[in-house]
Amino acid sequence: MIPLDEAQAHVRGCCPAPVATTAALDGALGLVLAEAVVASEAVPPFANSAMDGFALRAADTAGAPVRLAVVGTLAAGAAPGRAVGPGEAIRIMTGAPMPTGADAVVMVERTSVSGSLEGEQVEVEVEVPVDNHVRHAGEDLESGQVVFPAGTALGPGQVGVLASINLGEVPVYRRPRVGVISTGDELVADGSVLAPGQIRDSNRPGLLALLAESGFDGVDLGLVPDDESAIESALRTGVGACDALLTTGGVSMGDFDYVKVVLDRIGDMRWMQVAIRPAKPLAFGMVDGVPVFGLPGNPVSSMVSFELFVRPSLRAMAGHVGTERPLVRAVVEGGMPRRPDGKVHFARVVVDYRDGAYRVSSAGGQGSHQLTALAGADGLAVLPDGDGVAEGDEVEVLLLR
Image 1 (tube, rainbow, N blue to C red):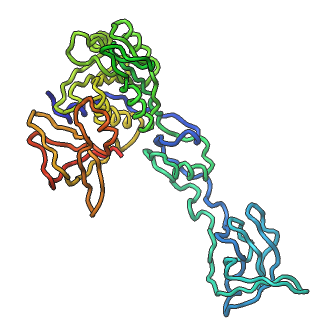
Image 2: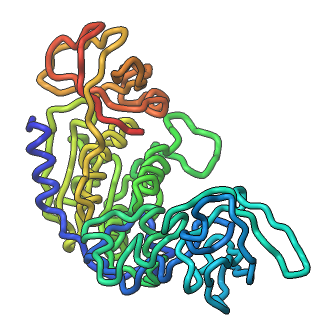
Image 3: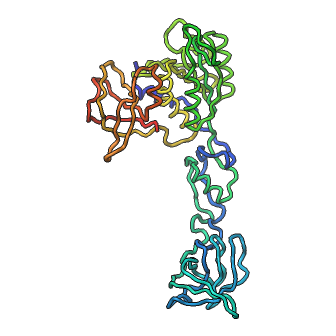
């Protein structure tokens, strides 16, 4: 068996570098900037009001309350039609440009309006300073300013900022397309009644869901029987259409592990027995320049393999700087016993945060076939080789949510 960190380093060292491209802004969520973005215009582009109220000269509010003549109304999206002179005010809406002569805004709640034969007047109840409720041009971003550096992952906030500077296309790294194949004569995926010895295929739907959750484009390459020619055809289709390929099953040492046979013939593979539980068997290599991950067939093992090997590698291929799930220290509740076997165990746990600390407890059955416990888990507790951890001990936890 080989240590986990050695296997991870091998996988990541072989995966290709991220590929730069451009994407429309409305499709850029979750992608990573390949270049720094520089603002081509100021945000906001002009001084404007932060409130509904009255634009006026701050000096005219000295000794408030004061009465000023209302000489116009300015809505958002309209250009000022006249300047504000001494003793005057213009009714202004949020976002409307500040008229010439005005240097402050009084919110409407601190005013009252009355009419007379001479015209409308506003009584201002409070004295305000210059720039009161005024947003200045370039207050958020100045033209020529670096908005986001290369390597920034684009979330909703970043997308909104890029829209504010009129960036319709974004320089990003390509989102990897990842094919998923399940193999095995025992698997059924068509909803039919199970025959003796058959089971439902949960690996492919689970892995496709993990890919979608992680921000990658999953490609369903179907369920393939234990047949060398069918497996080779599916693999070649996958590497021809995808940036990476995941297979489940057929990577161990059994007589019907045809995935191993085919990958040995068409690819440059390394077959590893990693010192972890679950997910000890792992195949990884390149077929026609495309990384192929041969994951174990047990459902929990395939998903834990994804978290430890696939997801970090794909994130690196997508240009992410941070590739790992968060790792925290947590207090164990209920204890987590295990037997020494030379492996690091990844226990499925429920994670809670209270009284200033993370706390974890078992999510249920820990067998590599017991997918329900993984579905209910918030993290994977890292149990070093030994007898496990007792109630109240601390353990490292890989947060899944």
